[in-house]
Length: 171
Image (cartoon, rainbow, N blue to C red; front, side, top):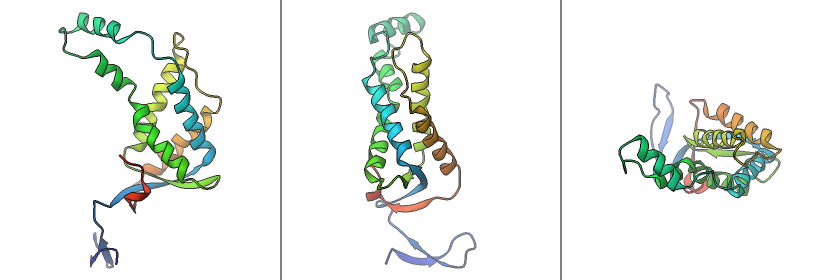
């Protein structure tokens, strides 16, 4: 039995089951192509391998101290937050790579996954557009963008699935 039976919600005259929140989660099932997930993995690798952004934390701290009260903002923390999108996205992409068995498959996106991937793509695009930054997006960037579009479409809906948390990457 999946849980305890009860009357359906919102006027639906059917039985529903209560599943434990500790082991189940609402997700968006999204159909993707392996090439798109691989392209996103390459984008992650390219950004990780690229030289760090110009200007060390000392330079950033000096600018911040000149603009606002000295010590009010920690430059190291700010720099880490600016580079944080990769940390949010990497485990998701690695999990999807491991779970996709064919050229086309379904991945499960938690609420907020699209926004994290979008933030990372925007971060990479800004770096690519910056002439003083050596980072360039990989040639298959269009495939990574296609994955982002699929996620946008797949998560822009009220319809979600409930799956066991064993099928999701760790948060």
